Image (cartoon, rainbow, N blue to C red; front, side, top):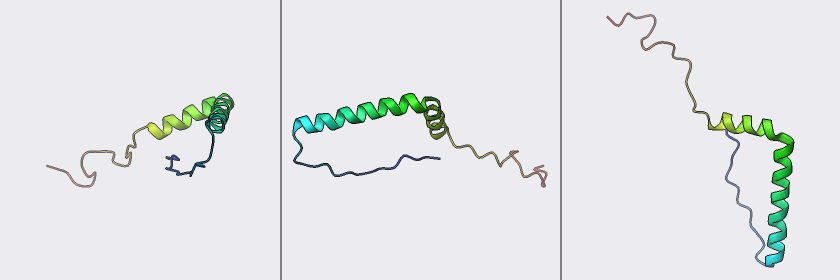
Length: 69
């Protein structure tokens, strides 16, 4: 289950460097607080997203109803 999406957010071109820094700092604080609050759940979700997808439906190399020899 992959929840990462490419999201394009147009940023204002009129921000001053100070305004851009304020937004950057706000995002850092928000990231830190979310990480502290949901640490274990975030780790589990990231691990699940990064795990290779394995098809467990195939139980044998050959079709069980036909003898390969």
